[in-house]
Image 1: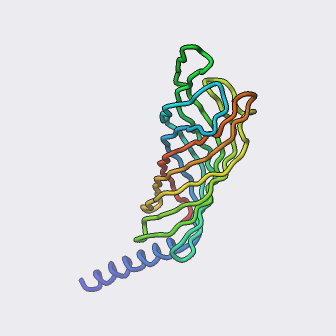
Image 2 (image 1 turned 45 degrees about the vertical axis):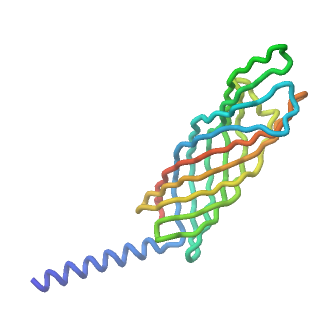
Length: 204
């Protein structure tokens, strides 16, 4: 009976040791995807229209990430294809009796966050960093806006994450500002998102 017990304990110890060594690798690679609640806000408007009452729409994203552990800290670059945008009420000031309609903006972007963070309690992460954003397409109620918006820009992103085995979960806030320039119509457009994602680590 003692031999059986010692054998079981030895196998359990070897399993725990092997698992700890596997998790001690400083490099993690994985894929991720999820949804976001996203809206647009306007400032420094030079236009015959007014933009009021921003509303959220649902966005989606998918991509890949790498995570390099350095003691209790980590560096996590990502490449994510994301849809975003928002609804906003557009008022035409040229009309004697202004009327408003809720119009939807839709963007498709390639975002590259570069996050720096630290680990808490071996499973919780806190992270923040810049986001390089490349506009792939932009539309307003079916009208193409690509030629009027800055093609690339920088934003910021931050939030918390949880790791459970090979799964990783994140909740983040992101804001990216772009310049819109058209004859007689210029403004700064800020796209804000609350991002929720789940990922799978195939190397950890």
